[in-house]
Length: 231
Image (cartoon, rainbow, N blue to C red; front, side, top):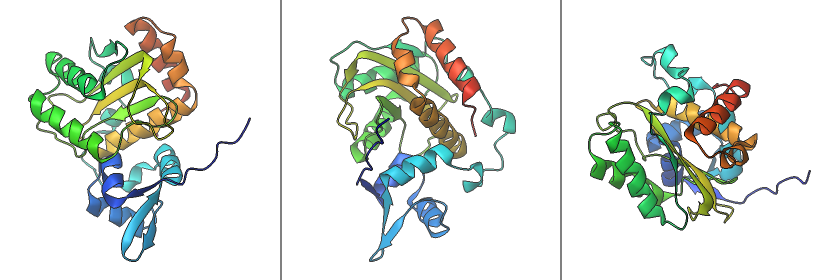
């Protein structure tokens, strides 16, 4: 198999903060402690994309001190975080903004969020900083910072577009699967990012695109989660 060429993309401090949903202070602390791939140049921090992506997949749970999070919660299966009606088959040729509005509307209808307009604004602000789309046709949609008062219950929505969406992926390709991730704790957010990144590398998107029902999507996610458990 041909080896994928390395990307020259580097994130700024502001971009990596949005990407990981950590404060800039947390990011700098991790960088200084060599717990996050980083380069310091003339007093500024830069973060190589390829190394950050690898770090996300392998990120240890000890990087954040959130002792109050119950262990059982951290191990909650993906299917238990997806509400009934939370798997959405999206029509093609929709703009990024209209898809975000639809995801937020569904989140509110399903009783997951309290203020849809504020939640939408937070998602848009996050996308404006740096896209949540990654390579391999997937986007991990989330707010820049956690907003626990807004989240009535932690949840994940899954959006599937068989025609593909223009989501600003780094490789210039279309995005086919969206995971809208809304957790109350940053450690849980990072654990899910890591798990979904590893599942994506194992071929998750192709399998999901073969499904025509919510039941089929859940079966695929269950199957992948058995092979690729949360770290």
